[in-house]
Every structure is written in C-alpha cells, then in structure tokens.
Length: 255
Image 1 (tube, helix red, strand yellow):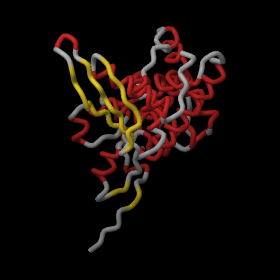
Image 2 (cartoon, rainbow, N blue to C red):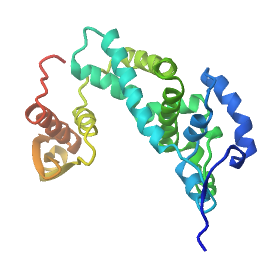
Image 3 (cartoon, rainbow, N blue to C red):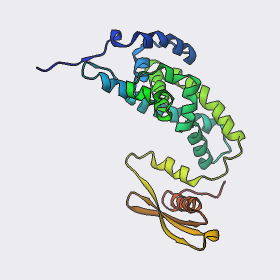
Image 4 (spheres, rainbow, N blue to C red):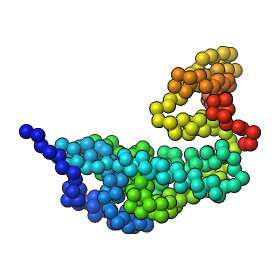
C-alpha cells in the first residue's frame, strides 16, 4: 500500500518553534505577510528529511540560493557607490570579506539564529545550532525569505544593517591592499558551478633552513599558473597571481 505524503500544514510545526517566530521578527525588524517564507528559512534539510516519510516540510536550500544572490547584489551595489576611489580588486575583497561564511556566521550569531531553527535530533546533538555552515546558510535563506515576502525594500535594509559595520571594519583594518590572490581567484571560480582549483607542489629544493617550493595551479585539467616561494603558501599565492593575470586578465597596476 502506497501512503501519500502530504505537504506540511501550520499545525505540523512544533508549537515551541512557532511561538518563537514573533520574537525573531522583532529582532529582524520586519513582520512577514506570509510567514511560510520565514518558517522555510529556518527549516534545515536534516529536519525535513527526518519527517519526509509522514509529512513533506520544505527546507531552506532554495531560499538560501536566492538569498546568496540578493546578498551579493546588495553589497556590490553599496560598495560600488560608496567607494569611488577603489579599483575592482579591492571592491572584490571588500565584498568577499563581508559576505563570506565567516561574516555570515557572525551575522547569524548576532540574531541568535540557531536557537530558532528546526534541525533533526542528530544535528542538534552534534551542536548544529552553533555550526558555521548551518548558520551561514540559514542567514542567506532568511535574506531570500525577506525578498520573497517584501522585495528589495525588505531585503536590502536587512543586509546593509549587518554588512555596513563589517565593511567599515574591513576598511579601517588597513589590510585591503594586502593582496590575497588565492581568495581573489577562488571568488572568481565560485561564480561557475563545477569549476575546481587545485594547487600541486611540483618541486621542493634547498636545505631545511632555506627551502624553496614550486607550485602549479590547475583549473580543472588546465594548468593556469605557476609560482615559487620559500613556503608553499608563498608559492601558491604567486601561482594564483599569475593565473589571475594571464588566465583571467586581471591587472595589478593599482594596488
């Protein structure tokens, strides 16, 4: 006998979860017209999978995908308008520093977002409410929820509430002009799903006190850069710089 699995109704959600939602909306500073978007944003796939034999809960991965795009667009527009003197490379570093997993983890913790989420028992017991990837993904899903419910008028102020202080911190930290070529090339590659970077140490010479490494960088099966240095990290940075210059056409005349 085939049992048809129905979509979750409001009554299927844990009561304790539902009673916490008004408190979270107060923290967010936004009241959802359609609270289903908020419920989905807080529902981890582990919870949905645990319940799927009886009730189909929609989890937050699709909204996370949308929220990631909204986040990048809002931050990109803000830093483009706010930092006229900065070249493309520095704008990229600013954006990356304010939207990466570490930053999203900080934003989510500011909201105590983990305490509002629906997780399965296994993830809960393993500390899932404090895991970086769980919280970062949930924060992006929350951005997606705000956009779906209220458009950019709802999503953009929420994003900038967290991103602007982080951007000021990055600017005042004085490290924007220190090139991190590995992060820059990773940022570019991430825009194309399925692309993979691999650093291969092809040579190691010299005595222990004066080692020299040669590293080749591959994008999928293509060799796109080579670098040398007195440490693997230095050699990898040099390989990434060469790849950015020759493969991606990046100019480093302005630091």
